[in-house]
Amino acid sequence: MPNPLYDALFAPHAENTATFLATDDGTSVTYASFVKRAAQIAHVLVDCGVTPGDRVVAQAPKVVDTIALYAACVQTGAVYLPLNTAYTQAELNYFVQDATPTVIVCDASDEKSVKSLGFSAATVLTLAADGSGSLSLAANGQPGNFQTVERSNNDLAALLYTSGTTGRSKGAMMSHANLLSNAKVLVDHWHIQASDRLIHALPIFHTHGLFVALNTSLLVGSEVLLMQRFDLDTIITEIPRSTLMMGVPTFYTRLLSDVRLTPQLCDSFRLFISGSAPLLAETHTEFEQRTGHRILERYGMTETNMITSNPYTGDRVAGTVGFALPNEEVRIMHSGREVSPGEIGIIEVRGENVFQGYWKMPEKTKEELQDNGFFITGDLAKQDETGRITIVGRAKDLIISGGYNIYPKEIEDVLNDINGVLESAVIGVPHADFGESVVAVIVPEDEKLSDAALKSAVETQLATFKHPRRYIQIDSLPRNSMGKVQKNILREQYGAEA
Ligand code: MCA
Ligand code: AMP
Image (cartoon, rainbow, N blue to C red; front, side):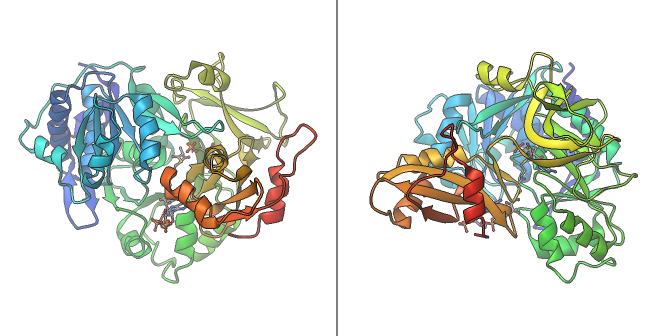
């Protein structure tokens, strides 16, 4: 029975004895054994009552079984919902209440807190960093094949939450066709082949590490070095025996800080790709001087997968994100009309890659995914005569720290609720390692508050990567004549590195 994503990514590998995942601890898994493992997990999901369209939450470590869980969701027709492992219980609670999953897979150390959310409709299974846990135990005794559930192109395969300017996270509904069409385009565009070996140091709960990195590898049957996290020494060791890396700009600035990064080290490497945040032109230039490789920068969003890319064979120009990918229409709009070359506007995109809308948010969907099919990205850009795009800023109030998106409103809501805080404004300031970092500017009601009081409220509610690195207390926030807080003034005033 047809299942577009399963048929393209997993089914062809049932007899493939090549290595799929090589892990940090020196063990490896072939494609064939991975497909079998996914089938075993598919049986577990069905035993837990999962039916097509049901959501399966994974707040789980970066191990083989987590990726097999993704494959099992596709095979059973369930909707895979990965979550950042750094999320606090308060954050997790929101996602679970909103998505109403049938199964939640979490680390054993979080089992108690997940069960205490009071969402009794879901079965909670555990998966630890060493691969042990109740998911693994339940899967071990299951048959190694599973009758794939029929799905069509527009059926959902995944639900990925992205934060929003309103402070409320939105679940982006990704269909089989959305994911598959983009993976195919990227394989073609970046010349990915079975002979590639990918250094995978990204988290697997975002589009970048999950779909861009893994779906493309699965499509061609190439090897993936699955690193638990970014580790400079391991990457330096692995570069000579690998061909491909996908990373955020922080990966490249950290590599540049190491004297072992030389042309000889990267001699047999094929392609370094960067995305998720702006790559400084200096980083691009310095990397070429040090290695002879021009980093290929691309641009994308959770809602759309990848939108533009620098060319593989043509010129990779520092500071630009290249051209619209094949089968996508990209236009730059200002005041309801397409801008002329050189003018700045907001990027809009239309194509098979564009998502199905926000989960249970029809109004929000209407605002951003227009009737004509163009999705409004909120990124400000200009285009030259040849169609090459340069991102110049963001129309949305968003901070990108080390490739993680942080919406100031979410932090401001937490700060404004603290006793003694009158109001707050959260801004992003330049940071050498993460590109940007978070600073909170606070107006106390009367007396100055202690940093400890502010921090403790933030820590219980928000994941660590969202925590402000500095708290600044002032008498009043600068506002324009419309009463809107002028964050640009705050950034100028407090923009020195945190
Ligand atoms: C870790 N910390 C951070 C970040 N990462 N703080 C701010 N921003 C971050 N990005 C905090 C930790 O909570 C910890 O805080 C301290 O910094 C050190 O943590 P550690 O784990 O040692 O950091 P690391 O392992 O060196 O991680 C840095 C990293 C990582 C490698 C840059 O953040 C990362 O892998 N980023 C990639 C994110 C990504 O995949 N984005 C794609 C989403 P404390 O000491 O207080 O505990 S965007 C996307 O998918 C779209 C579609 C796209 O275009 O790609
Ligand atoms: P997310 O919402 O997590 O999917 O992140 C998408 C956002 O990351 C985009 O809207 C951009 O603002 C940003 N982004 C992704 N790639 C790039 C890039 N190469 N240059 C600048 N910004 C980027």
